[in-house]
Image (cartoon, rainbow, N blue to C red; front, top):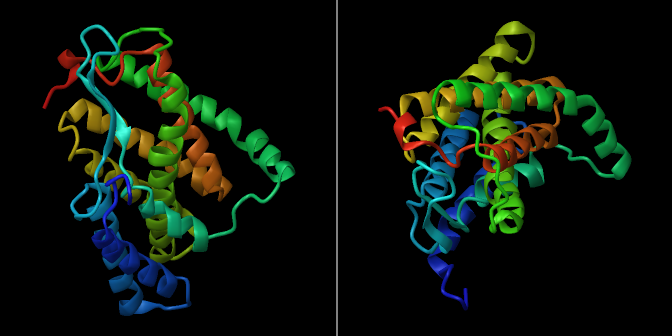
Length: 253
């Protein structure tokens, strides 16, 4: 607030989101739950796409060229986006509480995560979106925590922990339809959200596949930490080993 990054008016969408998630925590069903769900999605989308006043991004690096032939990359912190996942994590489901639980999650999901990262990296490479470009950029030590706390955690909590979880119950809560339907619809929403930043069809196709992988890992493990880990490791792999964020020549609309 004193740095001029957040203004009091920012409390309006945050407060609305608090109320809706608090009500969704109850056993509401039917039309009322659907309306609250749609309302929470709408407010969260407004925060994600920076539509609400009261938030000012903190730009750390602007229009940086991290790789030869890459589109420019702007790196910063948007303080509105983390709220899309904060209340989901607070009230949506139990989180891992100790080191033993975290170790168990790692053992169960790391092989799936590595396969998922390999699939995504291969698709990005062979689709012409990236080239092999190993590097150790100066911003890596900022990228690691910022990408985790301002990108991966909010996006996975909102997409998988909220939307996918709700869709799973709307699809019946069991069986192939509920499992595959919730993953696919959420992956489509995930790709559609990225259209507001990049309209390239190959890029959006890759995001859709990423959404399927993250969603399948969450659906299999029932652990939001697992999908967050996969998302974060892929983003790190992308930055360190390939063109980042993407080749200009590969951004076909």
